[in-house]
Length: 148
Image 1 (cartoon, rainbow, N blue to C red):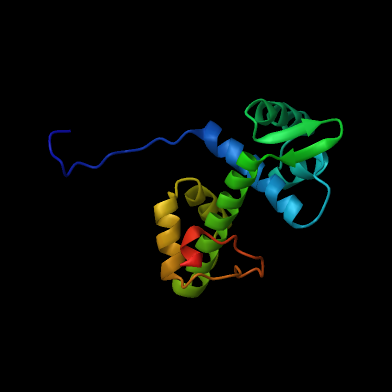
Image 2: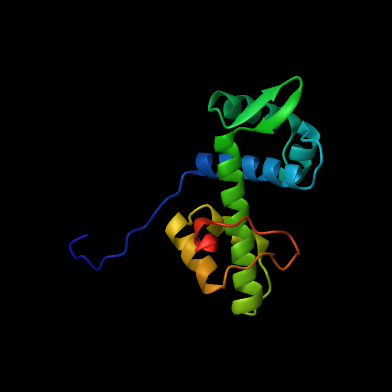
């Protein structure tokens, strides 16, 4: 890499994306006013229940969830990450559907949402005129840019 114009290749951290997907799933289940069950998380993420238990223990240690025999809930930190991931994905869906007029590709949305900075998300939200709902009719969590 001699020149400032050389492209830089980036390898993301699969572990961080994995954590974010669990927090997003829990946030989404909570949004639907359903009890957050291991079986529901497993079905939503297409993983086995022992994998969910293992991840919940890890997230509990990282203070992102409260996990016990009584159930699962997001901590303030977990809520923030889950809400952010949901905001990213729903804004991307609005971008694809309304602005780009292309079919929503959930796999692509999932691949991009993990790499969006707050600055990028707020710029996208502003460009899209602060949409309140995604094309599926779900509320988009507002960002700090929405109150301006």
